[in-house]
Length: 370
Image 1 (cartoon, helix red, strand yellow):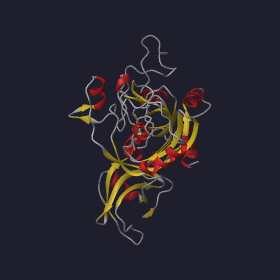
Image 2 (cartoon, one colour):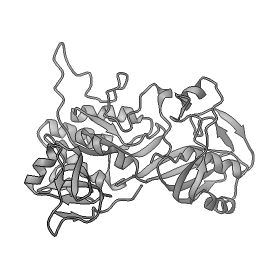
Image 3 (tube, one colour):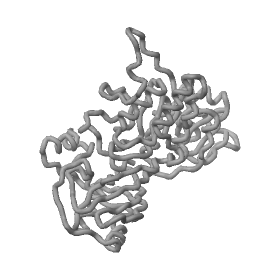
Image 4 (cartoon, one colour):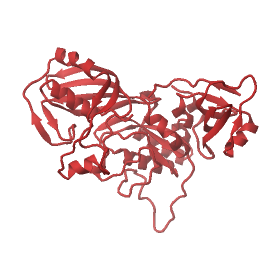
């Protein structure tokens, strides 16, 4: 057996994760997507004629990092990709609001088992704060609740940034998916109730002012850990600067191991789907391997005999001079193919999640990261 460190990922959320129930769509962050009845952005939908039966869903395994367009909910995006690939299962790794664009990693098939690893990763955002107004949703979609004629100088903004770097206490937005006595905060806020959310620690690894187009707007870049809300960041900076503020533009550029080079616009996916339907290409070209989400944990290669035991859910004893001495989570491969997520400890490998990658998977070329 050999254990090699996996390559190239940035470590450990959910920045700006306001659930989109106010748009009457259900969010499926870490669960296989159940197709929304009211969502239909796929131009191919509705082409069935008469009583022609629906095509059977197929096994598709891998990641698609959609460059989500502004105006589309995360749930809509999952539904569209599920139809494009005719996939049995799909889910996304972290809600991205309709007003936001950028990286929305969508897991298909067995990749849904690796969603938590992506959701726990760092997120990077480029966002614009509009000064002078605070809104109840902390973004441009909400109602104005406070105003100010004051505008911050560049020097005042830059002097403030260290206060919002590192581990800080942050009060989530009232319109968020956090539960209050069993109910979502956004439901209570929408019903007119005063929602008091407790502050919680979040980590902001990097925050920088990158542009100031005019006195009313400032553009920032932030790299954050799990649980951070960019909308709350804009709100809190505006209050301290004495001017108020809200998010008026937002783009996600990094989600765990997935960066801008991995993103695919929806129109390109639809064009690839059309070419594949005519035999001129394959949808596998749009897929990234399931194990791409596991870049931050070690890989452990086993023999075919040991693989057969692990596949049956049985533990395998570690032996020989190449047996790893460390413990913890690993992903197990056999003959270069992903087999399982497992725990190493007490001299054995204990399988936790076994993968069955029968069906459509990423093409060979997509196994090499850009």
